[in-house]
Image (tube, rainbow, N blue to C red):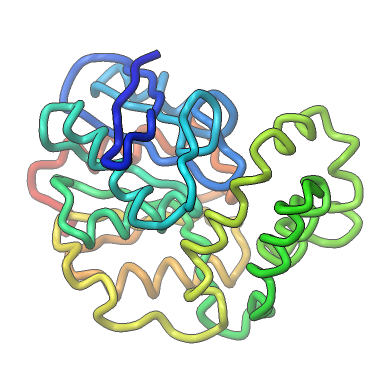
Length: 270
């Protein structure tokens, strides 16, 4: 384990694997560097890149200086870029994709950007996330009702069926989810403006001009596929890729070759 110090003094823990050009992996909600898709993905990508797989603030071995703000998480990525030598490519998944996109738009030294299924809701193909969702999530976390916060996130944020949400506490990973459930409001705040069923703002990420890959699973729900197609069309220099047979829980063995092809292509996104 290595550490980088963010601008506000927060310690950000990360693993560095492999050799090659630097590639930073940004996890989604309830993920740590060892729990979630980026752990197996890092192992595969380390064959071609120097992979930095980190704990977002509040998770794993990283600190959690309060109050939280999106700007602080962007600064965390910037600290990792500096640790990598001053520039890097970045991959983000789920809400981590939205965070990575925000970092790119704010002018960080990101050479290439790859995004998998940022959870935007842009039309009526699923119910929008309620306006009071973030506030209710914050109250549950503040009162240490972590299990209830996870259930709210899964039902209203992710859109899972009630019966599946009710069964989650019986799953072996439940304790790991509860350990990082206090960070759910962070993820919800990052994507809140883009989950209301409205089209994406045309020039919201106009400054993210680096080559960008926007990927989605072929078996993911229609609302996610619609959102990723729209995001690709909105970004200045993006290509779109559908990973057939994949869902939001994407297999590392399927995703890794797609990322290798994109990040090693010298001709850019298009």
